[in-house]
Length: 450
Ligand code: FCB
Image (cartoon, rainbow, N blue to C red; front, side, top):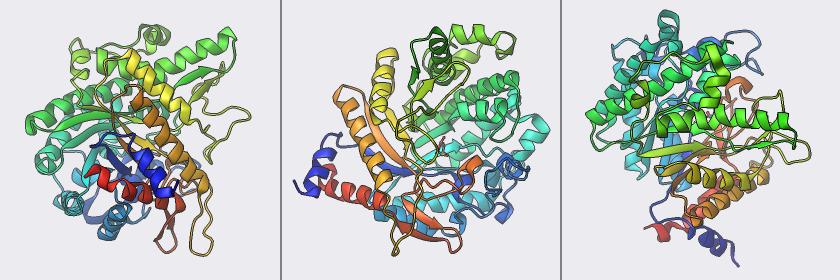
């Protein structure tokens, strides 16, 4: 079979309206940390702490996307994708988290959205990808305080009013588990707190803010599609030992059921509430109902399965398996399992795979990057999704993480996830082999989709 025939055969396993896309987030690519009136975010401040970012870097310049918007939009268009997932830097719009609007910040996203539409690419907007205005952390305790949920809903309403004439898809939060657990319990992400009690409260306030924002977006734009993005990993016990099984049940409870049960069933899992004891969040009686707003879609970010070992929460690896440069197990079949399990256990809205991709060490040789490992990762996961669709799961989109190599949070610039390589010294971009494969896949299937 010719390559284009096999690419067409793969594409034919997906529905006609499937949203093929690529994803990024504001803090990881924009740079321009204090340009045009932008306020500091908790990530700007977190990066200044000694020792928290592996390579000692920060997001001040990143991929300089803020100043390279037009040419980066051309790079997105050159892939042939129909969809682009990006996030709004809240402190660009509301520099101190107060209601005052920074017009220049809004203008950037107006140009981004218009530039996508001109290129026939649908914008998928995320409101919160972790860069909280620092002032909300200092003056109001950030997500630990209920107040922040209401501030977020106001911000969501503002964005829906200003961009909702051109943007249909609104994601409230990206991976609230990361905000809560990595940011407030393990302290490895901003704001860098280490307190389980605060973390569960922050998680509850993120979920509450999702519900409030969903209502606010819909009252501003009745035709908006509103969803949330969760990082979901299927969890397997490492052995038959009862201890590993207990760990597996708990990991699944914190990572999957905590969020899925709250959003889709309006309740937190009883076993986790019991395990938390006095660390369980304080709630108002109406919160559960507010959190469980109807979802137009659920976004799932999938990177790896968890192998539960007693005493090692959220373990992403095991011996003798292929891993990425993050040390995460490569297991496409587990994505199929995850989707089937969610479909079995919940009354799901349409699903979107809002992130999937891999970090590997890249080398530029003769001006090109031969990242066969990343290409194979993406292809195998696309196949895994096709299998789930054939088994009856309603998946409507797939977004490669990521458009560009970028600031990978606590790993700094040391991990590369892009399908475009970024030379940080020159800000040059090179389409990697993986990106070329994705482009060919989309071109081969273009007629199928039109
Ligand atoms: C996800 C994040 C994204 C990126 C990938 C590798 O958890 O949403 O920003 O860092 O991991």
